[in-house]
Image (tube, rainbow, N blue to C red; front, top):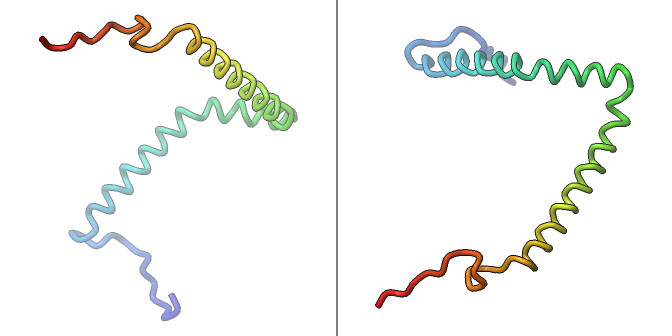
Length: 97
């Protein structure tokens, strides 16, 4: 860059054919992804326009935290009432004679 070289230009075939194919594939993949996520992005833009994005994000984080805590309590409860293999929850492994 300091020398003033400009390396922007067409792909040099055959050495850069793979790069051209990759960039074509990547462009198609990103266009497909944008087409799939566009409805969600549209909703988020509407929320932001109405001012809901700033108020709903913290509420969603609190809800996710509460759900995670409930899941932890459920796991602790289940582990206290349902034991491991030797308690009969899982089938016993029979030893070879």
